[in-house]
Structure formats: C-alpha cells, structure tokens
Image (cartoon, rainbow, N blue to C red):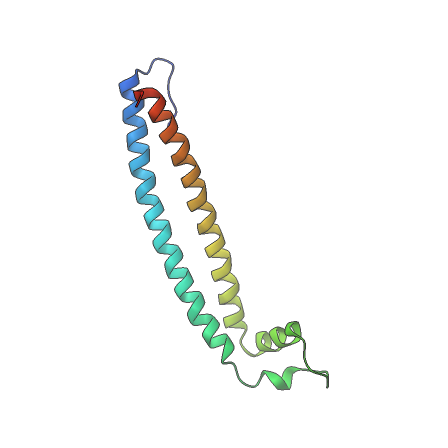
Amino acid sequence: MPLFNPGMGARDRVDALENYLNLTAVLRQELDNARLHAWTAMAILTEQWDQIEGWQVKIRSSNKPTQSEVTEAKRLCRPDLHGGISEAKWLINRLSEQIHRLEIDDKTASRLYTLIVGA
C-alpha cells in the first residue's frame, strides 16, 4: 500500500493509489502465471509418481500396505519425485498466499480511492 505523507493532496493520493492498483494487477497476473506453471509441474510429477514401479519390494510387512507405507516405499525408489512434489506444493501454497494478500490490499486501496474521489 502506498504511504501518504501528511502534506499530500487528494490528487497525489489518487495518483499513488492508481499506480499501486496498476502495479498489483500486473503482479497478480505474474503470480497467477507462476502458480499455473507450478500446478503443471505438479501434475507431471504426480503422474510420474503414480507410475513408479518396483516400490513393492520396499514394503516390509506381509499385510496390505498402508498409504503411508506406499508413499515411503515410493520415496525410497524416487526421492527426486518426492522432493519435487513437496517443493511444488510448497510453491503453490506460497504463491496462493501472495495472490490472496494482494487481493486484500487491492480491496483496501480501492475503498480508499473511492473515499478520496467520492465516487
């Protein structure tokens, strides 16, 4: 959010808010694109994860394996995929947080803009 100095006039405040709203619109688009790429990577990694073969030999028990045992066995077979999926999930969450933060800031800036211009 732009900071207003006590001596700033209404026009300067409006200009600052307009610049901020334009900038955040561009940043949200870039963050959305980055999140789309992360989702695409996640889909590819998840498909590869689902197709891992040979994990069964890593299971120690003779019973039907639990989901956590299957995950651990697959992680032992393909630690790179496990790490990539974890990283993609983390990145998607952080990008989503930033997009949400900018959306909240935009609402605040928009309300302030409306108060200043009286429209």
